[in-house]
Image 1 (cartoon, rainbow, N blue to C red):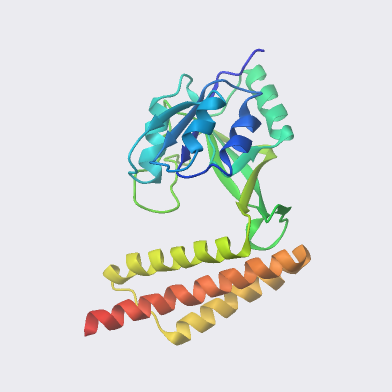
Image 2: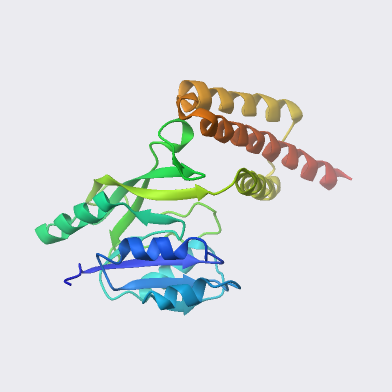
Length: 257
């Protein structure tokens, strides 16, 4: 089998439910699969090793630093960054094969994700389209190292870039409870970051912002067309938006006491 000159980097922490699907989806393209594990206590490491991935343990330093550490372990200049709960579609494998055979590569590529809610692909609302830069030349591009949940790559307007037409599959959640807990964690994180910056929260802000977000996602962005899952997603985002301002209000009230 002739592989592409492409490395894949995956950062993990307790991803035994996802890691097999993720690695198997990229195996047709490359044997340089790098897993950076941040201290998993389940079978993530054993599963990754059994599938031929090169696994490195690295104490958690934040998303960007973990990914840059992974880039340093790769054999090729072009790196595709993929999360453990994601997978290449067959169409993406085919497109990347053609792209590398043409050997005229841009510096960075953006891919559109199809997010899945309990295994149902979501095609409307806040989840689609969902573009992210994931394929890049590591000699010119790296992850911006910050403590933000949503890390980014340091490209600029002069960077040679392009979009991939095929989709990357993202299995966002397997249960309602998991996604609600994830949103609650993000709400607490938002409040803890905004409060030291002097940002204020109020019940009115919480209600108005949450209501606007629900209407935008469920009606204006046609989340209603995704059925029950569309309603669940918009409702979860309503709760997240409401709670992040309520949690911020609580932190500010505690600070005054």
